[in-house]
Length: 162
Image (cartoon, rainbow, N blue to C red; front, side):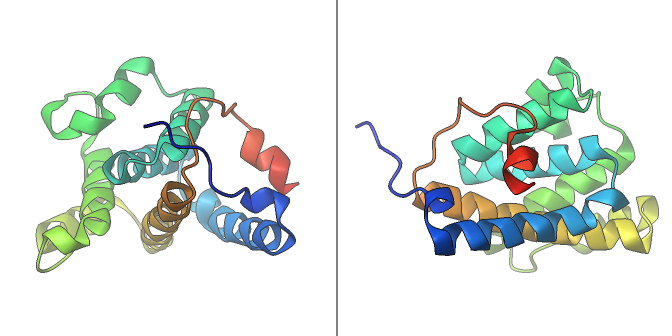
């Protein structure tokens, strides 16, 4: 069964106003994190949520930020990989646990939280928490609307928001 995109938020005045403000919210925390880290976190949550549009976007944005193909290909299996730092592993664990909250009685584990606190300052933690929340919301919108991956080009979202 081929699913067509159900609705173009960008073509609707209410949707476009919302998307612009939504993207601006994410941009507010972006300076607190290295660009590649925000993309890795967004990519992992998007993989879990099955959001083709967001997987496409964040893979291409991460590559444009200098991320290697090896690391991008291993994000889905980061626990079984040697290419991520302890700090990146803590951020990826936060992304996973913050995305799979229904799968765990406590949401983000104390172990993961301690690792995040060990590797990141308060501004970075605020940015990580906000980033996980925002990408999960973006994934849900894109999945509801059946937005397809494959056509995104790096820089496209920034151009649409300017």
